[in-house]
Length: 131
Figure 1 (cartoon, rainbow, N blue to C red):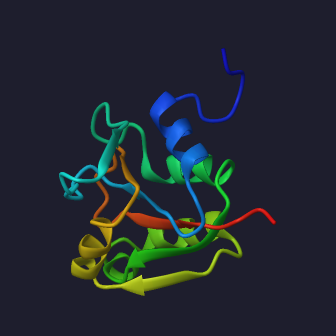
Figure 2 (figure 1 turned 180 degrees about the horizontal axis):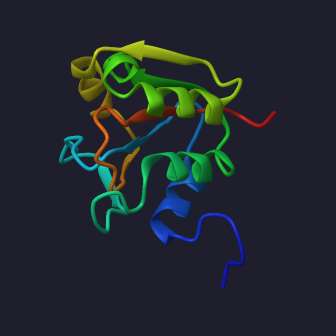
């Protein structure tokens, strides 16, 4: 049995399988998930698990070279945007419209669905390399 890190089997596996440039999306409960993209559903109930702790957990195990969020997050969910910026630290974050975000999600390796009910609480994490 694993003692620490990400314990969810599917999530741990997809992170281990990511290659340079692959996209992993961590999403709120409402983001549409394209049928051709792997769904890792963590949602239990509204708010559980929350978006930010899941992002934080993933960042402890995934090498991320850049991230993308919907520009709408800055005005519709400013507290989440601020907290996310702090969690991401030096990871460059770019902004796209929510419609463009949904288009980009069609190329994701997987989408992790949380129980988050905050609008636009979604992030695309682009896998980097450790060397």
